[in-house]
Length: 259
Image (cartoon, rainbow, N blue to C red):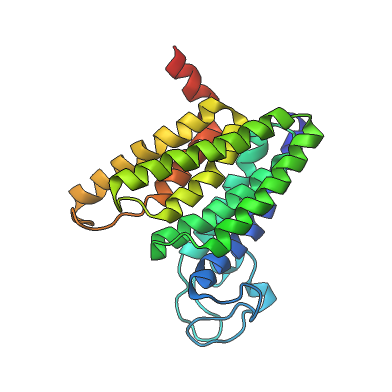
């Protein structure tokens, strides 16, 4: 790895820590139809505003030993975990794509899908307030990055792939008669655009992988007794995880398959 790529990777990871903190806010407030800007962050137990020094991603949670400074109520470990995982996701972008102008688009994409992952797990919802801006801003960033990279053909493939994934999942949802929510169908457009931008093989990995990951997770939940046969299991997280896998290992998986 050259020094420039290393610098960009470290910068992306640090930015990911900050973005992860905001992702926590978005995932918590949007399903409640609350503003993600006002009021500022506060302890959910004592409602005391969180001081700036106590709002440093991961570090503050460790220094406070997972407790509120004012009321000593426990702070969920999920917050630093999401922040750290978002940092890892962001760092993976320059490592996967190299130095390219589409890096900001993929950082946005990963941040949005992380937030959607959390809301689907918590509320079995993929909120339009996150998804629609995610698609719109993502398309602008991806198109601009593709123009600067001289890869408008890839952008066109991304838009076509978004439509293909959307239509395929729509057909599956109609055939399954309620087996999939329309939120999953709309999510397919976002995932399809960013997966197909990298190649049709990446889109195939994301699409087929979603059903494989979903099947494995459902089987594990059923066998462990955490879900019953009639319990609804969110499909969005499986779609998102498969799309992340396509981003990271799409080339290797396609090459292995062709062999």
